[in-house]
Amino acid sequence: MRTNNYRRFSTYCLLGFVLLALPGAGRAQRISDFKMGYSRITIQEARLEKVGTLATDFYRHNFELEVGAGQAFIGLTYHYATKKRNTKKLGNTFGKTEDGLMLTTGYNLIFSNRLRLDTYGRLRIWGDTNPAQALYATETDVRLKLFIFDADGTGIVWNNAVFPSAYVGVDVNKFGRVQALAGAGIWWNGIGLSLSAFNAFNGVDDVLNPGKDRDRIFANLRNSGISVGVSYEFHNFMLWARQNYALRNGGDDLTVSMQYQKFFPRRGARP
Image 1 (cartoon, rainbow, N blue to C red):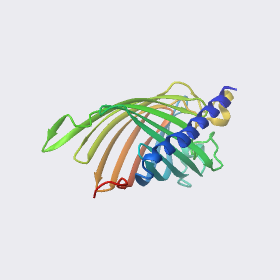
Image 2 (cartoon, rainbow, N blue to C red; image 1 turned 180 degrees about the horizontal axis):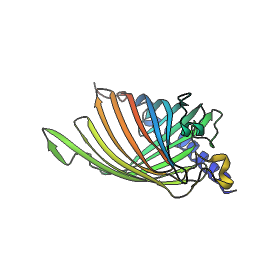
Image 3 (cartoon, one colour; image 1 turned 45 degrees about the vertical axis):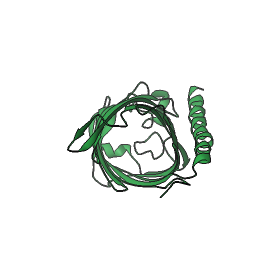
Image 4 (tube, rainbow, N blue to C red; image 1 turned 120 degrees about the vertical axis):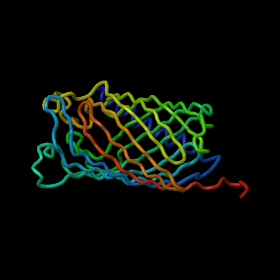
């Protein structure tokens, strides 16, 4: 009963973002920007409670499209998860190749030039996903992040402003797993550095003895980890790399991504 309630809650939140946030923003400005991106996640080592550290050859590919309308956006994410064949690595036995499509949407509520709330959600709309195996391809979840930042910058280094930021947040998936999120970063002259952490308060502790959660083992892990990232922006492109270090029930994964974003002028704005 509890799981069904969480699923309904996640679905209603996502549909609410689509039906309320986007039309409201669209009345002021139809389309403000377009974004597309690709990311590749490589996982060559995983840590599981009661099992230990396992070598793996897992790869996750994400292709993303988004259309923004002011402070809101809606998009699609295609996820293809696969593994290297015939490597005889024990960790590979936990994963099977999958793919799937998700609807993504969100809204950024700006309180001031120092505080904003980012909302983000995903909803599976296609794909035969098995959440009990390690390469499950789709997620349904809702994420909130409260950011503290300085829109004017906090100092000048070599004639360019420095912009620090930090956030705290929470992520709830359709199974009811709750993750606490936190992070901090700094941006200067197109270069960004970040440090983030997450910790799940509930979920599957032991993948070999999941009990009643046998049908959702890997999508509902009680996991935690820290990540360091670096990004570089030039013109409409952004290159980004992040290394995650699992502390509990996760992989030491490396993410490399490229993103293109095009902003459109407001209607009636002077050239």
